[in-house]
Image (cartoon, rainbow, N blue to C red; front, side):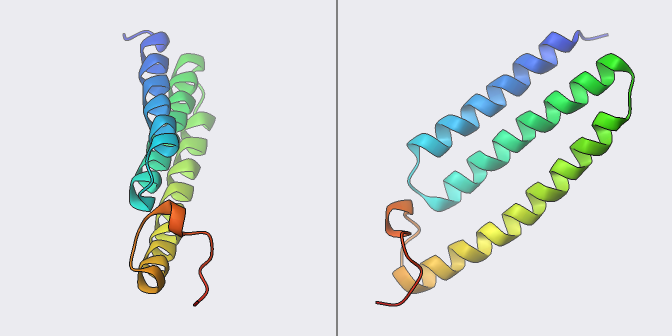
Length: 101
C-alpha cells in the first residue's frame, strides 16, 4: 500500500506547477490549463485523505471538484473566444476589457 504522504507530495507538485503557470504565463489558454492543474492537485489531496481515513465523502467532493473544473473550462473557453474575436489576441495583458473600442 502506498503511503498517503506520496500522494500528497504529487498533489503539492501539481498545485505548485499550476500556481507557477498562473503567475508566469501571459497566454489565457495556458493560465486556464494551469488552473486545471491546481484543481487536480486539490482533488488528489481530497482523495488521498479520503483513502487514508477510509471515508467515501472525499471521493464525492473530488467528483464535485471535477464537475466545477469542467464548468470552469467551458466558461473560460467561451471568454477566451470572445476575447480573441474582439482583440485578435489571447494575451492576458490585453484582456482588461471585453468591450469594443
